[in-house]
Structure formats: structure tokens, C-alpha cells
Image 1: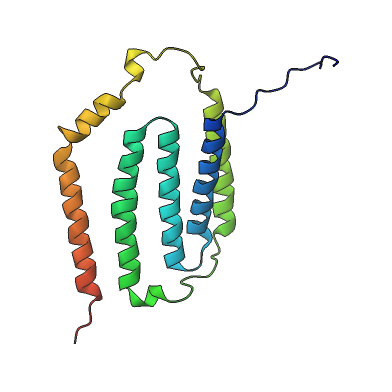
Image 2: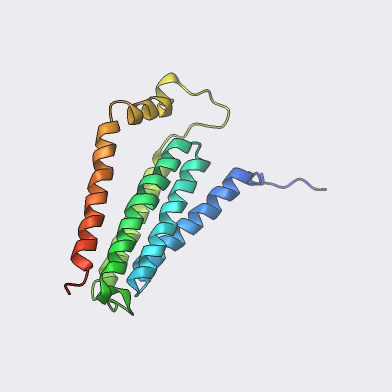
Length: 177
């Protein structure tokens, strides 16, 4: 077999394949959020995008952040948004808004943002596989301790705020008979 004048790139690892699949799911969910004409379908796309973001965290070995993403965003925020949509009768049925005049501007801003983020990610000196983790880089354990120790009260207050907002949505949406 003759030798090639260039070196072939290595085959992707299973983690890379899973990451790409989850990233595609996340992007598709985000597109549904933006492009769906039915508000309830947009909310379901948001749930999909949140689950995809949690999957990216898990693949990146930040399991605690992934579980927090599911609990806070999927469990609380998405549920609250879905209840608000369902309790508002006018938004529940049919298309809520046609395409607007700013779609071209939004597309240009999105492409510009993508290009800037791509340039930023390309400029970061990422650690190579097999390099040891420096003590300052392993902050996940400290972050987890902070969430359950000194920041437990703000999380509990946030949960109470979401509960009060849900109760307020129910009171506003009920029939006045």
C-alpha cells in the first residue's frame, strides 16, 4: 500500500460522536423555539434545547451542572412557561404570530455572533488529552459544595418565587364566574 503524502485525521471517539449528536439535538430544539408559529410548540422546543444543554454538560464531565440544568431549567422554568401558555386561552390555539420584519436582521446578527464565537473558541489554548489537571482547574467539587452550603438559601428563595409565580398565573387565568 503506497504511503499518503498527508496524514489522515484520527477517527472520532465515541464521546465526540455522542457530543455531536447531542449538539445537533440542542440546535434543532433551539430552531423550533425560534421558528415554530405555535407558542406551545416553541415551549416544547425550549425543553428539548434545555435537555440538550444538560447532555452537553454530562458529556463534558460536568454532571452536577447537567443535573442542575435539568432540575432548574427543565423542571422549573419550562414547566412554569408551559403552564403560563396553557392557562392563557388565547395563546393556546393556533399560530400566535406570523414571521416578523426583523427576521433578516436577526439572521445577520445570528451569523455574526456565530462567527465571533467560532473565532473565540478557535483562539483558546485547549488542554490536550492526557495532560494533568492543575489544582485550580478542578473547581466542580468546590462549586457543588457552594451550591449546597452558602447558596442554599438563594436557591430556596428562587423555588418559592417560581411557586408564587405559578400560583399568580393560576389566579389570573381562572374564570371570574
